Length: 372
Image 1 (cartoon, rainbow, N blue to C red):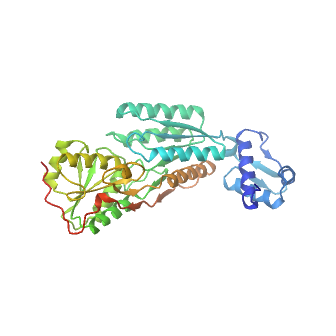
Image 2 (tube, rainbow, N blue to C red):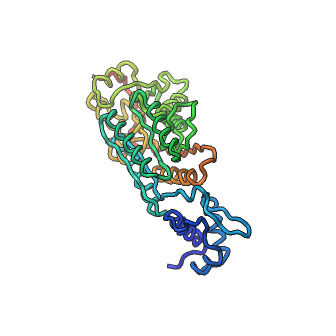
Image 3 (cartoon, rainbow, N blue to C red):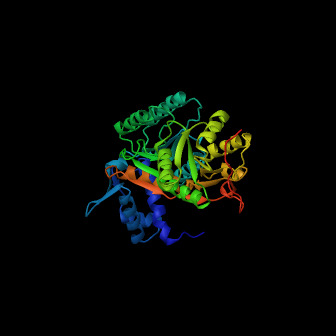
């Protein structure tokens, strides 16, 4: 198949970038336009566009009358980046995100050092993550995409230490899904995430539209700041209701705690911070003799697998995993090429997906939910 002229310069730029990473231009000078025109069999304008793209990536610097030279950043490229996550065991978005980032690396000819720590013991998980961090630094990676540690009382301190290790080694960091500090603070690192606050507000609006008047939010202690942002958005969207997005801390499969919550708060809708928790909660509600959505409506957050496999199918906020992966990858490439540019926080929209867990039959209202 013939290559489109519009994409040829990008292929040439990628080819030259791979050679730069491999140390082919140790003398710091890059072949001239004439040499590359002959090598690739293209016009001068195509080579100029390829050079412009490399310059945009921070890899070359052109000097009138002297030639084209590698920048300091280009001379230190290794072609290796890292992805460090630990939440794939309890949050389903990280598996598809990891696959997409791996694909992007293959497309760009990059090596990916991948660490997925799925240990159930929180303390041991932290130990393993820190070990992976040190191994990545030792390997001399160009940059890292990092899912911040959570579920620990001192998570913020741990995350500051981890990002500090990378910063001390001169390794750019892009945070995935959440900052390492809570609003209104900002860490100063690049962040690729959805707009969790707006998503919480959107979910609250839907629950109000379908008749919910007592909306609660299921929480676990020591979750990432993004989970708190969802709660804040939900509470804002529930303003004026009798139970305005009140949060309660409980494991969704703890029958005693859920029964106590139902009796105390009497919610007619419960939003959960992810779909896995929502599915476990629906099972517990069924054990207590409560029907979803007739007695209590339930909604989640993620929309990967759990939502469509649940009975009833789960209303949820869809996280655009492939777009998140592309955003994080592009932000890291930009940060590697231009380490001095100001930090960016880029937030994608989460889409509301309405399913049976919040659809009541016409004329059927929630009964008083007291539990058994």
